[in-house]
Amino acid sequence: MKKIFKYAMMFAAACALSLGVTACGDDDDDNPDNKKTAEQQKLESMKAITQKYLDDVVYPTYTNLANQSQVLYDLINGLKTQLKAGTKVKQSDIDAICTAYKKARAYWEESEAFLYGAASDFDIDPHIDTWPLELDVLAEDLKDNAKIANLDGANGIEWARTEGNLTPENLGFHGIEFIFFRNGKNRDVAIFNNDAVEDDSNFAGLDVSGKEEVIFAAAVAGDLRDKCFQLEVSWLGNKAQADHIARINACKQQNVEEFKTTVEKNGLSYGEDMLAAGQSNSTMKSWRTVMETILVSGCSNICGEVADQKMGQAYRATTSGGTSTHIGEDGKPEEDDANYIESPYSYNSFTDFKGNILSIQYSLYGAAGATSAQKNSIMDYLKTYAPEKANTLDNKLKEAIAALDACLNSGKAFVQAPGAVVVKEAMDAIGDLDDCINETANWILMN
Image 1: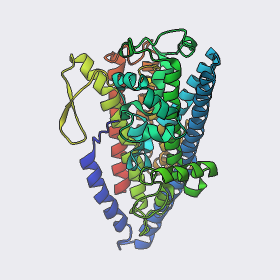
Image 2: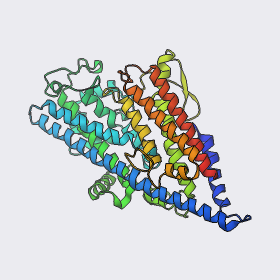
Image 3: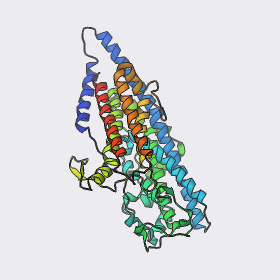
Image 4: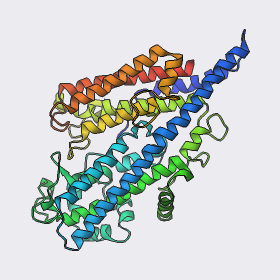
């Protein structure tokens, strides 16, 4: 998945301010004791915010994602076993997989306000969540008997993720999505029982069976599960589930480099690194750096991605006739793509986008699933020290979610109407939220 950082210069300036403001807290003035006491109270609040953010947002989200990815893999692998045994499968088997997929997908989207850290450092995000697919290549892969044999072998999961064996774009969520969803619906069981023909034009004349598609999906789902386990272990360290730690250790035996789980600088888990803010062994220079990371690297980053990339590419390309451009990660113009549409087979795009903004809500409110500010949350901090800013930020958040609800209630999926007015309105609302998040981060750094 492509990333965009709208506020690169602002982020750099904020980093400098973070160090400067922290130092100012210890400067002498007319009443140094009172000033230090006020500053210390803020820092203690930020420490408490960080602990709650990890305990109630990051850790449970990644734990739930890991558990649900296991459920998804087990169901697909079970389907593969049935098909290989010649057993006719039922529509309820396919529906169960589709339900499990959407649950795992929801946890993933609700984690995207903290893509910084392991998801980015270890390239887990692009590995499991890239689009659009290379369907012509997938079709050729699935008619290749040698590749199917490797995918179906004892080391099929490892083979699937090994560079050069499969096209990277076809791994992860969207490769699985293509197998089990079409046109916004769960696929008909007939395709898996070989009572119907694959109807995607890329597969015409290739005689690919439903069993071969499921063999591919099972290996990819196993890889997805392992990557979700890696996220969990990377953040929770030895607090992660023991069997998940064991699985990651087994994966390391296959490829140590690919399954790193600790911060390179210090060997700490990502949660431990954040909680050690201000200490010499942490990558976080201060508690204000932590707040900056959550708000700018996390919340602002996903705002920019949703508005400018996930929605923006298809919207601009559609409304301009395919000639528009956006600014890429390297700062250079890139042509927009009308086919750059997330979740086009399940019609889950707007739900994905809302999940991304909910991940911001939970980060600000201090708990996964929270609908209001919790004690020891960033929003609670703002209500104490800058109530007007808290009110503005809360309103912008609600407006962004309402705009996405309007998209969901529009009667059409994103893939059906990427140039709709409601799409532009949602992009604008998310952009306004992004601006407000960055303004809030700057205020916290300077006060």
